[in-house]
Length: 283
Length: 332
Picture 1 (cartoon, rainbow over the protein chains, first blue to last red):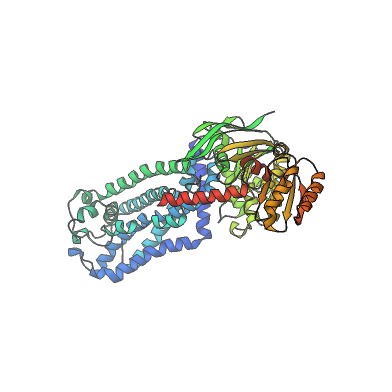
Picture 2 (cartoon, each protein chain N blue to C red):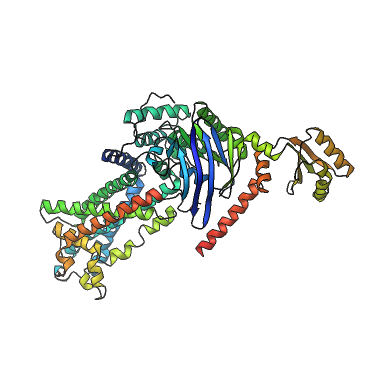
């Protein structure tokens, strides 16, 4: 066939991975701007939690010596950050399952692009969305009385931790999405387990006020580590300070949890992407 | 002669279901071959293996001389795929979709934009280029989908049921497009349930049933396997159907088929137009009133009927029932 265009042949380089990833990320960022409702509803949920706990439940929650309504709001916001970051999982599962069932994933897989780039681009766009949510949530926090009381370096490390954790969660979400038969199921699977995980943690209430059998679970819960690490890094109240391992090393542990999630689920998700059959099971 | 597709001994199982039981066929460069068969016969599985989306359990498959199992990346630079679903992004415009796929095909930004324009005008989508896909009709989506699969100037194009679900006008439009592609030298492997479609587009057909090739050849070769022409008789009274069948047996060159719903007897015959006269006489003698009588060339439907003893439609109904049963079983 004669053609004036030189089709670039396949080259397995890191350069292509970056190029392809950015091309796919752009697709999803365009989608966020075309359907701003997605971002709106991603925002409204954490904002509602802030308002609900700051003004409705907050007064009833025992912070021990750190007491006072203002203190609870400062305690609450890093918790909401942590919860939001865990919810980052739901920001991607439905989209991934939709792509898989609509056949566009087959198109990607039949192109001479890098297989990691499809998920890489999708997770990158999802990270972008989650960073926007964290920024708007920070502003909401400032309105209800939350303040950063640490150094600039610590605060930046706090935001870096949140971004890293959110990114790891999007890969986990991508992996879930690739195993779901339909977007409807993916919608539930993406976040049904998030509620027990975030409530059995120090996100809303100090662990010391929980029954003793639940305390060790809540203590080692990655969400608790993340919330505690944020409180440390942003200089917010830490009621009933303890001396257990996860309490002493909350920051490195939160980073470790994120990196382990990433190291496990990124390769698993890429593998699932390469082998996924359309509709999951079509013969 | 160069072979664009070579498939030998291809096998694939999904759990306990044997989707492919040793498939062999070849496609010459620059021709259209139809993969024909009911749902579940293995058409899509073959295409998915050839398009590097699925790994075969056994056997060999080469596209443009390259082994799909060992060098899938190289195969991907040579092929285009249009599946049963319009594989385009709902939220992007037509132009954005084509540019995205162009970039992912590793064209430069400029080349991708140029190629997108070229394809949009060729597929009559220029006016809709900057509208979101959501507002496209089914036919427009399929055209865009086909355009997307042509981004990289593929030498082999896989069309998996390209016209399923399209209205008749869009289907004819799609046929025109496919014919013009072939005229330019593209090799096409086409799957379809519409025997008429294979008849129209494909120079050769491979007929599949239950994961095996049951026949292959040109449409004429397949039809001659079935024998000469068909006399179709529709009787007035359903009660006379069996009577008509036995009355017509003297002129039959093969097994007669009866379609109860349509009150129709289909008689294979080698007597040409004389057999129609003969049929009228025989039926008149037996005092059977005729609602309609016609002589026609065999269709691929007749091919399927004579090869499997079932019509393509019947098989589909059976397959769907079996699938629903097995799914229910799997869930229980």
